[in-house]
Amino acid sequence: MILLINIDGGSRGNPGIGASGVIIKNEQGKILLKQGLFFTKCTNNQAEYNALRLALISAGKIGGTVLKITSDSELLVKQFNGIYKIKNPDLKILMEEIKTLVKQFKTVTLGHTLREGNSEADEICNLTMDAGKKNKFTNGHIYNLFQDISLKNLKVATKKEESKQLELFDL
Image (cartoon, rainbow, N blue to C red):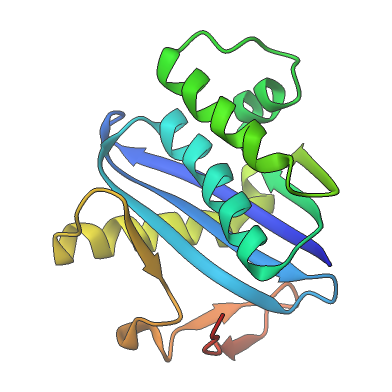
């Protein structure tokens, strides 16, 4: 199964509270998963790497075989693709885990987009940070946006600028 995935990571304070955001769609564009991962303290780069890690774990659970992943982190994309070396020891450890996770798939590509091309994943990061701060989430808390009753009637803009209600999904 081909999965289209957007990922993002962010931190307020760098380091500060942070989150990773993942949105997974099938080839037809139907949303299969919208999930955030909250951190009580992380750097922006740690959040970006963890977004990729979360995407790979989630895609494996969904049954993806070919992953087309997009990120607005040029550093992550170039380090993943071997263009830049990874100097930070924490990021090296995360990349080793990521490379191990990649082996379970037929194909994994990670490409770069500009920030405006990654707005859905960015929104997930911000919602996760806000919810984490408000609800005092613990470090590593998985935030499934489709299970949060307060977000059940959230309106999101589609590419056609139409508003639609988010659906609830069970995996």
